[in-house]
Amino acid sequence: MAIDSSVYGYMVDEHEYPDKKVILEEGSIGDWVYVVLEGQVKIKKKTAKGLVTLATLEEGAIFGEIPLFLKREKLRETTVQAHGPVKVGILDTSRLDREFELLSPQLKGLIKTLARRLSESIEKISQVAGR
Image 1: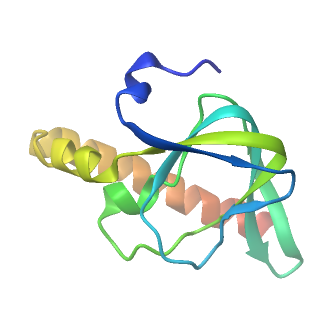
Image 2: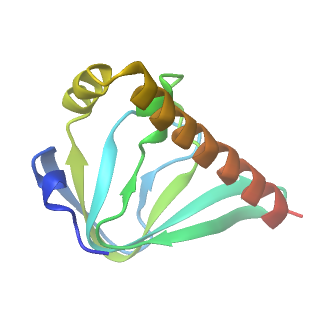
């Protein structure tokens, strides 16, 4: 997946991580939103069977957005780990939040619904994977 050019306008920093380095830890507090610039990351969730990989994200994929749009505790729902060397961009969450608040109530509601469905899907997939 290519990186949408509009994403670059929101980037405030870049970080590189070596293979297997944890970028986000499930249960930790944080509100940064990331975009994969180079390489891949694994999305993992704690289950009864241990840590299970739910997805592999590649260049252009964004992660860490659920707390931003659902306006709830900033607890991370998954662990994100480098799969090989990876470079990520960090997005300006203050700017994203300000622009989100300018949207119509209907569009904000739609985005919140999509984020909530993603969160619920993560939970359901992890339950099935943990059996």
